[in-house]
Length: 288
Image (tube, rainbow, N blue to C red; front, side, top):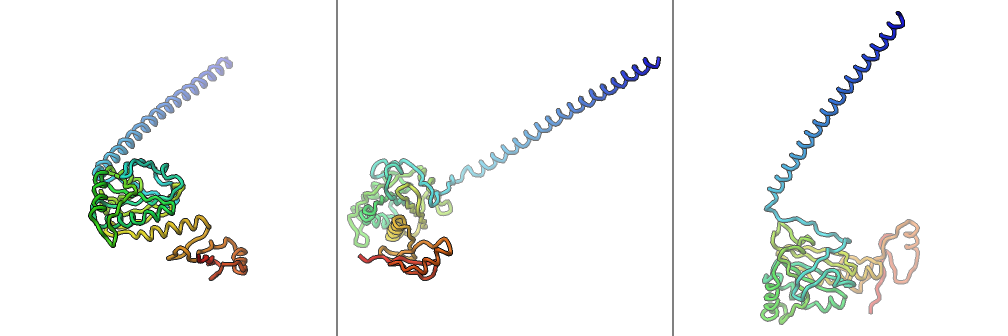
């Protein structure tokens, strides 16, 4: 009798434990379902609000100009194909191994631009002799370019320059694709005109210098040429050029990288070298 009672109690205990476990599992399943439901609700809420934010941004910026960041010194120059006054060009493929001065101007038939183009055209042979190609750009049609360049040649005389023929390519960029790639558009200045930008690009199609001028002021083409000569000098000889450097003037030897080198540099009697201090040494240039 005691054995039956114990067996019955054991079975009842097992049933109670089983009932408890089943009940707990059901609760866990319900919690999981509730968690999944709440997660779904939260995800849908977040997605809906993200869509609203994007739509709001799109509405606010729909009338604004497209913004592009300009490439930086040391980066690859953006590639492009373009129709120009000298035919179609493919950059940089067509200019492999050459320096390029790519410059933009606000518009054709404007007085400042006219003086710039006449000056660049009169110096084109000097740039060519330095293995450098000039390329102009403005947000005008090819027909406007041709008409303007003909007017320059046939009618304009400035500082002794007349009958000036512009033979370097002038890019027609009506859709502003190239101007945007190079960051030539400055929205605060004008949404539809490229500012006076100059990109100096080396034979490896790397951007080496960037010059920006306001719409109202013309560039100094002698400075563009001077900077080109300075960069070519630095590349060829591993030197730097001081302020206002002109071809034929002394150049700067790169600073030493250690105390030992600095001491050695100051004490050495290398021909043609002189130091103002350990960090500032020059190399004399031979006068031809």
